Length: 481
Image (cartoon, rainbow, N blue to C red):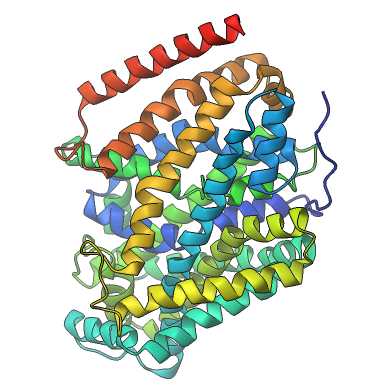
């Protein structure tokens, strides 16, 4: 078989896809969320499980999304429709593409608000607006930053405009050109911070906390959290990787490319921990201080250190760059769909989506100020966007992708596209059929509150039995057909 459709856009440089996909993965999740989750769940034990989950869950699902994208050569909706048609399956599976595009748009709708925090803190670090002598003082600055809708709205709007300007220029001139300097720049800034941390006096404590494996700290909840974060940090099930895969040249190895992206993403997360935890320990602060670690504890720690103002500015510049590379990827699926399926130019598609994004993100932004009392079932609009995407759309999308690749599509389609040696292909197929669905269902059950007591091997056994039963049923139906 040959590829279904001829691509209109391809990454030009050898590292175009790697930088773009790594930029999609390396966002606030790596530099903001990973460090505080590591702090909350006991350090090295959490990191160890996270690394295992990246290899066992993240890499196979990412390979699947890239293969689907390159095979279908289009937006998530068009690509999945083409590959299921090639296999003679129902076009209803294209609903996975719609779900991915919706998920990416919804994530970005609240993500630009969080990215707005990073940009506003970059400005505050440059203008001296982060002066406080306690964590409570930093919390007051953070609260005041969010309480003013004009202030917070300005910064989130700036992120939206910058994102649409880059995406509107196209795959090569916009996305690829921007990540060529943003991703290396981010790594350079991380290296500068790590060098600084080496001389902070507590680098050894940071390394010990990040890499020392203490089984006693490995709780069931930590295992589930590591599973979920390993899956979500790679930007899976949001349409980003599948769309980027559509631009991957046919002669590039999907397996090697995926491993490079996963390695780069993981390396940046670990580097962020090496940059942040020594500073926290040097100032006697708690690494388990949650989301406030970046916007409250860390700025206070920088103030108390030599050259802290310079490092603080570098840090928030790095956070801004990471946020922007992820924002670009999350909107690309929708822009590509409008461009390919409806004939809109890249610029018109980007700015049209940008207007809608601005409206929805403004509603999310108002959750922190004038809309603080606008709640439905106890949640603000911002919280609902986060809740629906992380608890439902992403797990369901990931599960659907694994089932589609493992049980629905003809084996020859993805076997040809992946181009793996027979042993590695068998390993990938087993993982996508059993390991990934079981792990994703476990995360999904935890998100629904079914596993409130934490990880239970009995649930794992039950899900595995169900997975084997489903496979046997599908195999029998396929033979009858």
